[in-house]
Image (cartoon, rainbow, N blue to C red; front, side, top):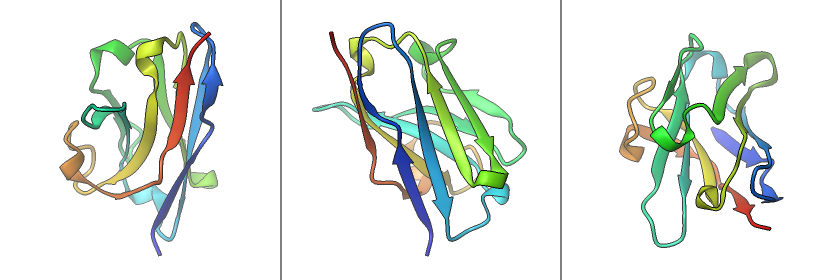
Length: 124
């Protein structure tokens, strides 16, 4: 059974950092691209970044470029999202998802098998 489980969210002060994890099971992570998305209350889900099976990283949202870093450790079946210099606009539920066709842009419809999400709240 394919599963993705996010963890690492929480409450952080503005300017702080968090590292999110996406633990994969039920399939061989080596062969798949994984994307990170987020959804704030009342807003659409937006694509942040994706890492291919060959470890090529693509960042889709200008506001996270230079602040967020996506990486993967296939030996641990885990993909990470390091988030630095967080601000209130980063408050959202963060999701990881497996790419249907590799890293296929920021459209959530191009990704299947989603995790349940982890809440990130940036507040003083």
